[in-house]
Image (cartoon, rainbow, N blue to C red; front, side, top):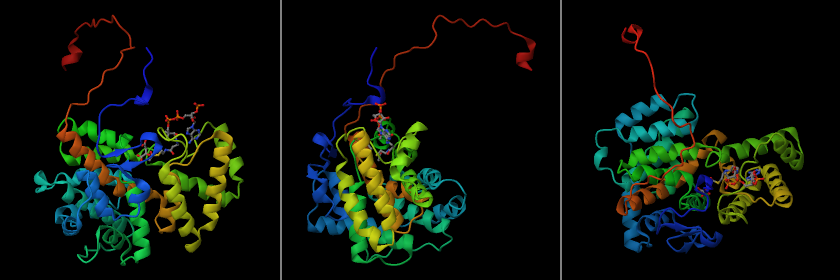
Length: 367
Ligand SMILES: CC(=O)SCCNC(=O)CCNC(=O)[C@H](O)C(C)(C)COP(=O)(O)OP(=O)(O)OC[C@H]1O[C@@H](n2cnc3c(N)ncnc32)[C@H](O)[C@@H]1OP(=O)(O)O
Ligand SMILES: O=C([O-])CC(=O)C(=O)O
């Protein structure tokens, strides 16, 4: 029988959180192009409540999130040990997410505390890997300012905060993408939040999903270092039957709306941070991919350069994506729990049939 492989084109459930209908990305009905100008906390509130907060609600929500950006001492003790390991940061984040769900007080953790702890844990992983002391949350800063402060050790300026908020908002949710769907599958069994998030982090790690951003930067670094013409690079990769990372999308065949905004941010940041050469390569590569294959950049393409311009190592790019996406994952876990129906599809069995197990017992088996 002919099934839609990878569930391509299959609508598996309803959601009020976000939509990609008509290749326009909206969160609870608001276009992403407008929301990218909002504050991160406003957008998290929107994803979780499907309405924007009023002024007082926003003030309270922000203060509540910031006050919760603290890790239990036992988590820090273990993090100091595991984050130093040479494993990939996403493997460390996967273990850390699970770890956050195993301390004594977590039974009653709700999304605000969970989001706050995830952001703080990610900042802590970065600091520990850089052999830097951990930074305590500053109650006078908002969530994004605090996140940047906790990774960089210095309070960010307004421009940087605004730009990073937009990047976080653009990546905060994307209806039933692979990691969110994974989170929803786990949520549909009524497993706890941390179990759902651990599964989501695992799905995001893969290079066909969030893991693409690290590979994008690897690719442009190689092109720059070897001074290869981007066209030759593409042809060589395709000859080797490799995909070009950061291009193509299951939903968007005529361009990812987020990539257009992210390109503008990258174009502003790259010259200011001495990374113009990478931008030039990315734009030339994108032009060729479109002309030659009709393929457009996706969300992972320009975020790679933006993260590099912020001074982050490529190995942590996917973890930064997880920082942005946790808000969306939590929104979907909550929605799944509210409207739950166990996710359990069917499969068509195509293996051998009419096999029979005939085995003689021997004394050896019981030794
Ligand atoms: C946050 C995110 O997850 S965004 C996606 C991040 N992932 C990447 O950037 C990895 C590279 N891209 C890809 O692998 C794919 O485009 C995906 C996984 C994103 C989408 O996959 P699908 O919807 O299954 O599309 P599929 O892989 O079948 O692509 C359709 C055709 O375009 C080609 N194609 C798609 N993307 C690429 C690419 N990046 N490089 C080269 N060819 C590509 C495929 O080879 C296929 O060609 P064919 O019909 O001749 O076999
Ligand atoms: O929706 C998808 O398949 C992947 C994606 O762009 C995202 O998760 O942001």
